[in-house]
Image (cartoon, rainbow, N blue to C red; front, side, top):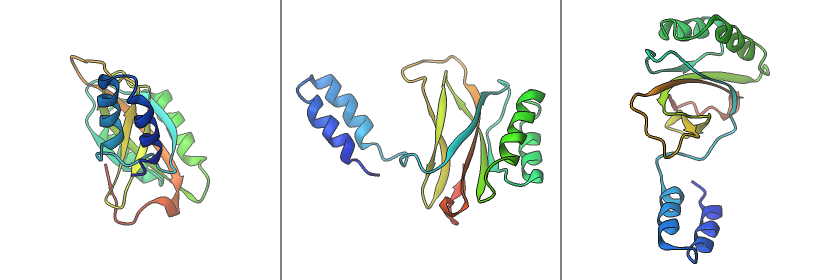
Length: 154
């Protein structure tokens, strides 16, 4: 994880106050997620609250069909049609991945990519408490050469 830019912010924040520094240290030095990779968030939508976690490659039509089946009807027909269009119209040298994940009032996501794992990191909704999880479907496209051959999806 490249933290160079974060260190500059952290040093500047020291003069602001101890609480700000503590918050920036947590952001700066977390190793849980790799920085955003070369993926493009192609579609992001709230799904049915009865959804289940699902993550898979959806580059081929049969993969996309299997992903939709795993959601057990958690998407509207309109969303399903738009996702199919996004996946089918991606550049030919790109692959597509879909994730259905729980969150809380999120507004977007980025795809964290490492040699071990590819997974979405939801954005927005920070410092919000939810009584129940809200489910989001995120579809990413990325150049085929950017997909690590050993990475687990999800």
